[in-house]
Length: 275
Image 1 (tube, rainbow, N blue to C red):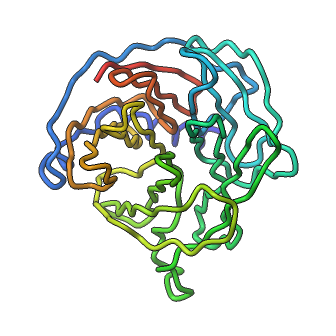
Image 2 (cartoon, one colour; image 1 turned 90 degrees about the vertical axis):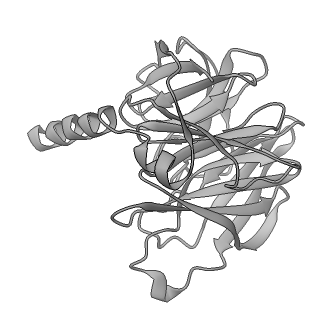
Image 3 (cartoon, rainbow, N blue to C red; image 1 turned 180 degrees about the vertical axis):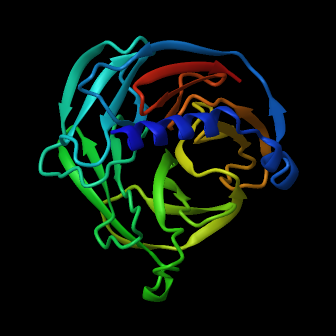
């Protein structure tokens, strides 16, 4: 227990003292220092939240627990009060990592956490009005020889125009490679090839797209990065802002509107920020 508490202290210190210097120098972001407001805290039953998406009305969100949690979603508000539970039948929470939502109300649950880079059952569950469908996939550029090259984890995605955009998380030492993959939002089995890539100083742990589709956000441990979207193309070619947020193990992010972002950490705290 003492070792675990020491680890948490050192991790919190690392995120609190991080900066955007690497991203500004190497990925051409501009530093931004907007005000960050703590709005609430999740109940203890949501002890390790790892994803966010908007619910049916403004100010309410769906979230879930990380690996090993119950196969269900929880509706909460910005203060952390819980209002509803949504079952995701015929599923198992192997390693649920993020949520996305389309314009028809379908919710996508990313069971694609892959810390060991050895899973062969990567799945996105599509929870709709009539049940749950499965989108299964593998990384086309991953081979058995890549066992020591741990760049095939994923904790971040969003939906746009009938496609799902996935951002990977690297476990290699040094600068962290993030790859962008795109999948159809239809059930089936797919082989996903990388569309773009970029290096960050920290691991990407969550993603979301703005309601007007002009920008998207990536959250890491300690930082929030905003990219622009030009001509409908999602890529890493238009870096806009890098915001140092600290706040421990930040794992989930969602756009409340085109200028306001809500993010959370695995210490159950909820924050908002105007960008």
